Length: 154
Image (cartoon, rainbow, N blue to C red):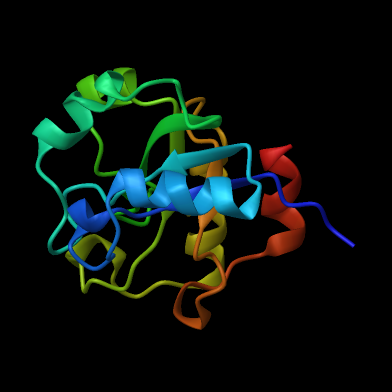
C-alpha cells in the first residue's frame, strides 16, 4: 500500500484545459491529506498555455497555504529530438520544479522519431540539471530504451 503525500504534476485553469484555481487545488489537496502540490501548468508551445507573466509571478505564491507546501513549477514541452525544452532562462530561475514531457503537437522538430532518437532525447533531458521528472513518457509514437534512460534520472 502506498501513502501518497504529494501531487507533483498538476494543472490549474491557467492551462485552459484544467478546471480548478490554485486555491481549489490546495483545498482538494488538504482534504485528501496531501502535504504538497506542484503547480506545473504548461509552457508556451502547448495550445492554450498561460503567458510568460504566469510563470514570472509564481514567486508570489505562498510557500505554505492551508498546510500545503506549494511548489512553483512548469510542465515544459520537448520541442525537438535533441531534447530542447520550451522554457527560457528567466522561467528556469522562477520555478522550483520542472516536468519535461512530449506532447504530440505536430512540432516540426519531432518528426520521424525512432527508438534511438528518442532514447538520446531523454538522455539529453536527464542531464539537464533543472529537470526534476519526466511526464507522459509512455507514448508509443515516442518509444525509447527504458533500460538505458531511467537509471540516468537517478
